[in-house]
Image (cartoon, rainbow, N blue to C red; front, side, top):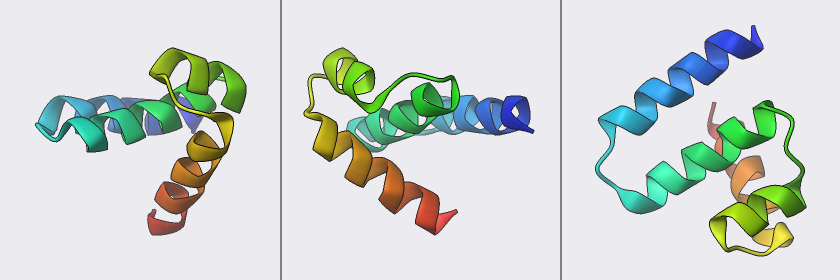
Amino acid sequence: MKNEEIKRLNAAMKDTTDKRLYERILAVRLRLEGHSFTEIGDLLGRIRQTIMETIDRLLVRL
């Protein structure tokens, strides 16, 4: 199931031209791949709290 979700996220990343949405989708994908909130924040240049809130908001929409 996780692999299918990652494939859908990859497709969504390819389909968007919105940089903010791309980054949000990437954060979710990285989390599904097992990265910590801190690691994702470091990779994206955001604080851990921002990453946690972003992922929570996106997952509620799904």
